Image (cartoon, rainbow, N blue to C red; front, side, top):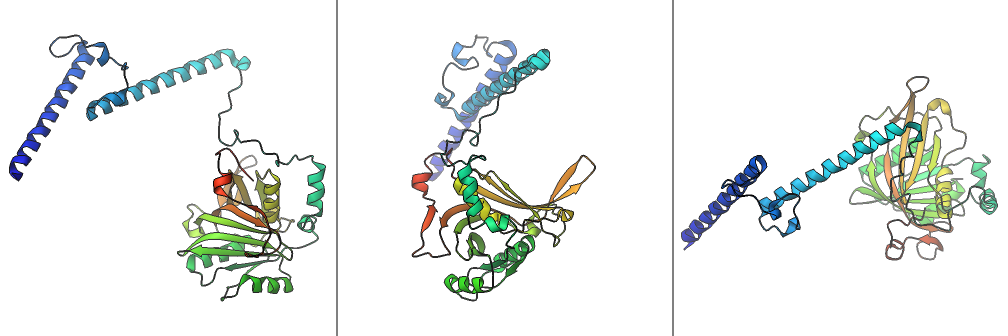
Length: 349
């Protein structure tokens, strides 16, 4: 019985192959002479573009052929329209209308009432009197403690060591089983201004806690896309001890301003331009991309950049008043995906 079944299956496949080959020969004949092999004019249904949905074609090979032809026709029409528009713009010259701005998720952002106006006096007063004002006025010099979760693995340790070469006046200490509530008072007594804790899961860094001392606030971030220096292609030499410049990009809301000022307070505000080093925190769609570059003067007019590393991406999970307290802490903002992520065009930073 098995042999009979195999025979019937083989003959069925041969029949399908013969049918497909016949259809291909007919299509080739229609393309060359406008008629089929028997000399019959093709029907309107077989003409291109088809007058019916391609998905209705049951034969897989024919359906794929018709779909690829339809896509090719669409590409040709689009290219022809583009060339026509280019010729019209060249003919009009300076009188040509400006090019339309392409629609993106960023420029179609849902309006947020908390977006900061640069000329807002209330915001300017709040920033002049908040806990970070002394850093921006150069009255306080930052001193950073970098530590990890308990029993860290090699990748997390190397990330901490590389971060300490990016942030001036930062010190790496190993956790040794101490709770954060015990570490924070020791940091305050030793005049540390900020505490950075890098957490890991399955030997991969996956979280960052940034606590401003002595009175907060504390931010908790999800960390992803971590690349150490050795993993970055065409990277430059290791960074020098010069104080880098700091760039904060696209932190537009009140919450974004708070987070941006937390990052800015990690670095002294007297950059040494001779080092040509710059640390960038770029916010795009609530993802904060960290990059560390050195810029190179190629000529009087051309400047290039060279990435030094490390690089990683952060996403804010919560912002807490005061220092770290997971049980009784008062939260200013908590990310709730089901309530807040209802629209792709709504951002919080």
